[in-house]
Length: 317
Image (cartoon, rainbow, N blue to C red; front, side):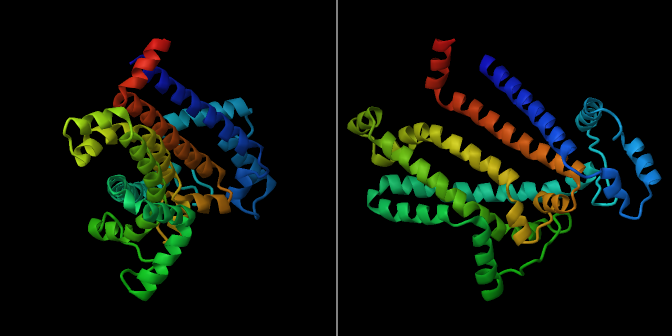
């Protein structure tokens, strides 16, 4: 319990530091948000009045505290790119799209990586084929895989219409179908990474003494693999899976652009191209929150799965 409290405290401190650095970084970038919001035809008096209204004439510390208070209260300000629309509403409208895309991609990662790793550990003869397959999967960028899917399955086989999108509120089944190939494009390289680590961990555990003892007592290779080796092999693999999950939830920017999916990735690109600093700040905080949250949960999960780590920490404490 003490470890969990300390880990949550460290996560909150890290998120606070990210908020400080991101706010300061965008504060020193050249460009006046008031001028960007009013456009090139605004008079200096109009710019000065809007700057006063937005609080841009205050000190950086006061601006940060005002921004942080609004962020904690759910009021993220207004977007410069989308004609003053509330940032909270913009993110809330795009968040379900990116969230379900990430969930679908993680589902494909698991159903590809875990069975392939178990099969490769049980059948060493196919080890070379799995090694070659994971090397190819890791080396293919997901955006290239997305373009390949569009060319083969969209244009060639006409299994889907490239660029089409069905809103999840209108037809959830159609929405999930629209995310199928984008999710696969994200999943395949990440599944190759997870397969590589999990397969290596399983091979190492299968050579350990406790597995040989289980085999000597009459357990079959499948039982020894699934009941004994898999749990310990998951410990290093969960760390990798946590990195993958954080990357999937926060890094589907290019895939959303390739498949024209109106998620947070496309919103971030639109904010960057239009220098919408308040919106970029909010999205950077979202990405940081996801990465920190996933890493914290992974550390806690490893403590629960592997009692040896808890014992080691207790001995050090």
